Image (cartoon, rainbow, N blue to C red; front, top):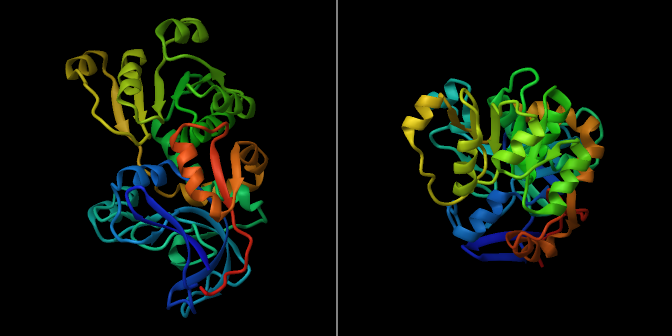
Length: 343
């Protein structure tokens, strides 16, 4: 079967490999229908930061159809449409026992510690799959995992009734956070993004208000109301430092973007202004919620797609996305072929 495998930093290959055989006990063989390229996929390709095995089939955001089930799997059957949980957790560390598997002490991800979804087929433990209760366009279903991340970030931010929210970065997580806030929050939602085409796409779909990350621009958009909630989806130390200055006393800044470098923080300034600074990593139980939302959100989600490609187009898409050349949120890999053995 065809698959996209990461060998090392900067070394991504489209290859023919052997398709999965009969699934093991507790596992499921899947026919992948669509997969999304994540910012962390790009980060891993660019830096090699999370390469734990080589080569490995990349990809942790994907939708699939159950092809076969192993012994002991009763909750799924062939033909079920499912989405994949990206997290490989130990289930026994203090974080897992406390219901916080997203900060598991031994956390790994599909596509890194095991084969991922950039392939015609993959085998995964049944526990990592969420069955969809109604048919969903596979292109929209591939958004389930990043939608869960956005839901978790919005839940962590927890803006009060009517309070303004500023989202920096209209990539997949920032844009999806804006989408969820537009449906669940009654206060103004502002978005800042240097890619004008991507910003305009998010604004058109969500109704968010575009802005620059400047005090005068923010004050003008909010008519002087305090900015009490901000979410950084860029990972840029420069942007984060500016957001810390923009958030009003008593405000909150959540970090969900993955980037490089360090942020200079004056702890006295945080104390005197009583600013809450916190991280948002992956998701807890939000994938089930995200899966349930897919039928009603699929029109908005497909409107946010940047480009639909096939597996052969993945390496070029990585380079294009790393160069910042995108007009939408998510590049989706559409995989339609029946898995075949390697020749």
